[in-house]
Length: 394
Image 1: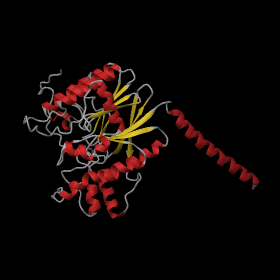
Image 2 (image 1 turned 90 degrees about the horizontal axis):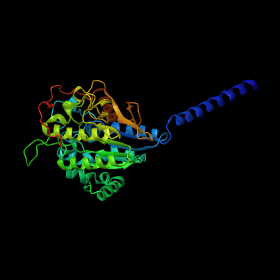
Image 3 (image 1 turned 180 degrees about the horizontal axis):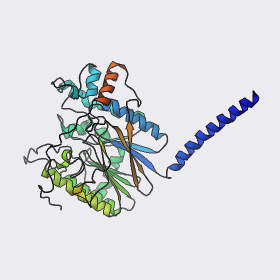
Image 4 (image 1 turned 90 degrees about the vertical axis):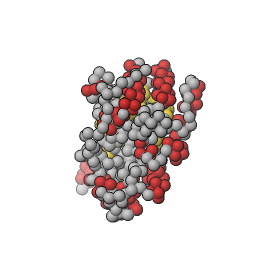
């Protein structure tokens, strides 16, 4: 009996030692000085279910690695109709967008008033409760039944965070102008310049010129050029990471990106050329977008961009209806190594990922989001090509 107890004790200690050793080896596998951030976009439709799962996943990872923040690339709520999560919360039997052909999901004044507070309460708050800072970018759905000024007012807290405000002051000393609460912004963190570009109105018609919206305004492109030239001249900046809602032209998602019109195509190509220049000067680069509701790791590896491919991901996986047969929700976890090298990896969340939503409404919402929330886009969606557009690259 004593011998058996001794063997059991030795086995138990061995298991504990193995577990401790495994934890230590995990720590040892991380390069000294590496740190992380997470990013995804498009959390309309099912974001109230998916975003808390992303926050929970990141809270667990934060106990193992230095995670600095989560970055949302826009489209918080649908705004042109009810989001499924809000509809199910109000009335569990209510059908969601892909289940209904009627106008029962037409947005009401009550819905529009509640949509952004709902996003803050159910999608942003879980991150903040976990101590994870959140940066927010504007998407095209933020300008449906709403304006940029309304967006600036509603999300001023996030558009004027200390890192962004401090960066504006630093830029002002370099004579790079910007405005408080601008929807395009940047901040430098530990040798990495994080830049958010606003192309949220590519579907709009300019009320003054009556021409299609250019995606990036002339002022924004001038600002971007100045920011990137400052980065090129600054040896302490080792990497540049650019986020936006719709992908730049000629990407894998060209039918649902800045290729909408020649105006946005050409301004997108101007931005692309600036980023090529930065990379040619030896800076690490990563270009991030959402808008298309799937994950695509080689966003700019296309025939049109052969010889000019930039490293980029499309990561529209935070809850919106998916554009592929297999529904995948989650986020991109990016490791930033001491030399500025960037190592992205997709992290998926599933129906069983915590937290679970209780009650009949929660069960129906989970079933809909993980089994039905998908729609293949129209393969013939209108877009332009380089052959159709005469772009001044200067």
